Length: 115
Image 1 (tube, rainbow, N blue to C red):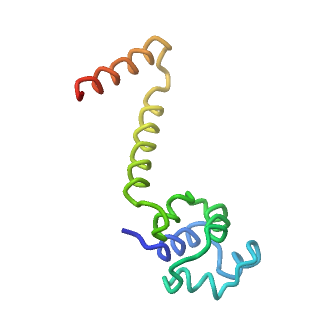
Image 2 (tube, helix red, strand yellow; image 1 turned 120 degrees about the vertical axis):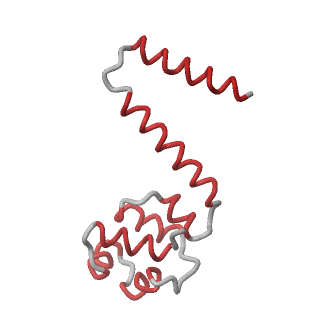
């Protein structure tokens, strides 16, 4: 599992920003950011994580989970559900309203068999 630091570092690099650039945008010192990325700071504030989540384009829940501030299993479950929903939405393109309703009915059928 990813640590908060590795998630932050990878996300920052993915968007092509240096620590100094992030400092300029957020007002968070690059020394503090570096300590976060190297997992030397274990309990950052939600405010800091919120700022970084916005700039790094990472879900706040992911950062909170990696910082052990919320339950990781719940976040993973939500991410899996979101991924599943996105897959369904992508595959539903071009379906008629009737076909979409049939898909929903089938999902309800599958769900009811479980119970």
